Image 1 (cartoon, helix red, strand yellow):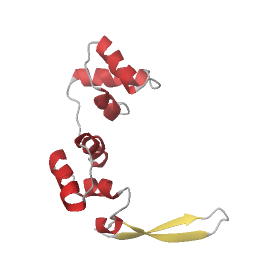
Image 2: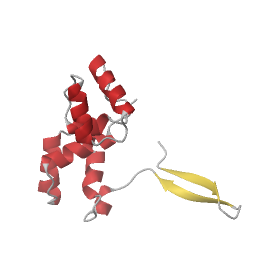
Image 3: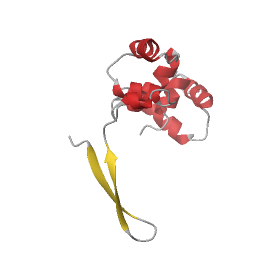
Image 4: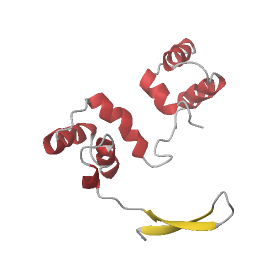
Length: 130
């Protein structure tokens, strides 16, 4: 795979311009930045939540809760990594689509009223699913 690419675009003044786009980064270049922990998560999708949390602390002294790692790890999963074989999941997603302005807690309670028990975390992760 190519590690760089040329991005060609038209400027607001109508001129053609281009910039080099990098596809590879060295996570070590971001030590001490707020995004360093997220880059570690992105580069190590194969590791469990607990192993990631241990690695962040042991190697980089980045202290994050298990919940923090769990809530952000899904950002780097492949699209359609979660399949919804359950008709109940499809029903829950349809109900959430009908109420886009409700909060996570309100959606969770609404689903419970329809007989679908889902946590606020589940609602957060799946409220935009199709």
